[in-house]
Length: 461
Image (cartoon, rainbow, N blue to C red; front, side, top):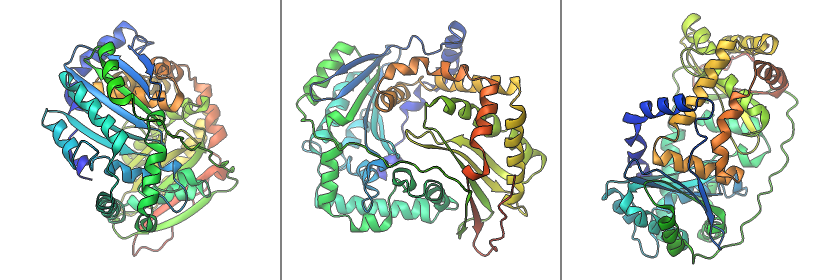
């Protein structure tokens, strides 16, 4: 997508001073680094939720609009629509010509982009603070009157299909990033299918269905507008009411996902990848949704196991035994049912089964003995740093606030979110390791370069 070529430079504006600012914040309030974060709420009669966090120290302002629609909201046979609109939203509206949104922002030294995932779609820009009205007007105009024309649709349909070919089908290991979700989630459609969409669904999509999708989800009562940076809240709200206040609300379909059926046996598959040079594999374990109590302990455990070169698995698999070139551990952080994920690329001459034997042994060790006090404290320090640095720029702050408001109904939860991680104990981490890392809850996807025999063993515990 052309918009993704636009550098979101505003994210980087604060980095030169971020270290000192974050350190000062930590020293002033080490246990509650976000406790004094300014957050103001408002809601328009048409349902638009507004979250504001003024900060007059840097003369920029960020505008982020989050729509409560992602690929999880798509119906079978119509995949890829949410991502398609990430492209369509820059194709013009009633008062903005094709491509002019980008031009108007960048000509003022601003930056912009949009992203889509399973759980939401967002659009954002950072501008000099005296151009806040421009950012709000542009977002309101495309919310009200996006140009969903035959020409724009066909143009962006072709763009998305080419993006799928170039970014997934022709890139090493990328097909496996789609396949692991299909394998792990099975019949659970919201998270089993890809955000970028199925080629046949994109090819066969009628314009009428695309227009219907926009009418259902791109409306003020299905959106959160977040502002952060150099602005006066009262003046900003006057602009918000002027530009967004007369946009009509729509009836939004209720999100009624199916019940995720418990996994009762290990799932395995092998994917042959013509673009891969070395074997690789995914591991996925079903875990609760983001912000469920156990999720915090699992996130910290992912840091201990696979976040950076000092982590347990990097040290054992890459440094000591040289079985892998790369290993990463993370939670996927979905709003709904989530995965604890391991991704590894093997070193030449080694198989996924060899590395998995080490991983399973480490998981068993955590379940048996837990983690060390030093590992736990290091993981908590990493989380605290992430939250403090994560709101240094106006844009990152606006995005976090919009996400919390949309996902959990209250942006002020961000102020105390760090405390949930700091409350995790070593026993919590041992308990979740015992509870979630059973072989029957495990999905294994081996990735083999085309031409290699599919001999990767499952690798028992």
